[in-house]
Image 1 (cartoon, rainbow, N blue to C red):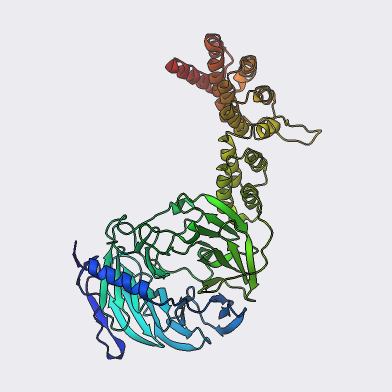
Image 2: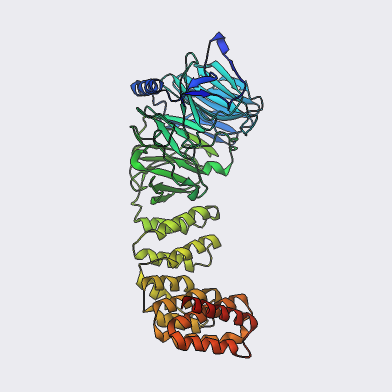
Length: 590
């Protein structure tokens, strides 16, 4: 569609400070016009790099501070009243929502440049380059939403745009302002005149924000597209759209924050869970610098493969992550104890550390052309060891991240990993969700036979102060491995009254799968020993599973033995039902 009617915005008004004649957001404007798109791409790529000051800006105990990365010292600190969100870097300014005002301070010295009333709107985004900046206030929400776009030149507001509808987080570069709006659109405005230069529209996914890096415009939210030469933006392929399966990650972070929702408070745990990335320059599908995404989850930092989100490394930092920025070679993470840590993209090794002397609840980082360097930390070791250490971190807040580490550990084919999973599944001090993840992963292993056999060899003993191993997951793993050495060990656990009833269905299924007739008599003995006690649900399930295993192993004689048991006068009614179901299943299979 070449002509777009801005139905999403409804009634539209535009105001301009300083007597300007801005004309952006016309009700009718061509979507994805090739000549407009190519001119914007040309301007972006022809502009001289403007990296900006390398700084960290954070909120700590009612104060806003700026830390100069190049000088390695605090630049300034200012008291703030009622901060309502994170500080936002916008070129030469820092913009923060304080009480009922939105305050812009000079990044150079922290002095107030200007402020505006919030009109009960939220500050949803800000960006800048040099003396040009833009920020957005919005009611957020759905029907009836209203938004305000402010374009700043120097220390004064040059243009104000009032819109009936949703505006997301903007970007600024090469004298242009890129404004995400209405879930599917990005309008490109000339910063000097306010005139609309181009309008992009995509159906590939939600567009809630924009970011410019290295002369490239990226836009999206859960997914990410980019404006490149020859790309028209309407379909996923034309926009170079990529959308990793981020909901599978702990905390389900997005590539760009959903600016159509109210921003989180400064102390929100949301700031401790994020995807950090830097975009790669070029045409075609979106690519990331070093082909890496970084996931911060409290004290855990993961290096991920963007294609499938598999873990390449995991590093543990000293305090919760509260901000991050990526560059070629690695990622800088700011933590709640004031630490800054630069981790290598290749293996997560610590390359540089610093301390800001603050204790921020949230921080924004702009690296610019700053290249951290120092004496590298110790070798992080093998990935399996990193993942095991992360899984065993005792911090209860990290359970989803620790479970993610367990799943990543399970994906490693190294036989030694099976031993690590045995440790996790066997650790009854772990939170249930984490131990369950370890047991589920152990049950699916196909390598590490010796670790499984060694674990099954352990028996419960009061005198030796030992407990039974996680027999069910170990039995399932043995069956997947076709490990016949496990049969006598499984039989011993079948006969052991200390073996948890919940493990017996998996144990019986494993004996059937392994196909060793040495298990036939023990299975018969178990049925006759417990058939009269089968009114407990877990025991009923165990009897049914043992009956199925006996039929599978012993054929017609086993079937006859199960029928005799079914007709025995003292067989408990619930057990009788489970055994009958096993007979029906055998008949159906036959």
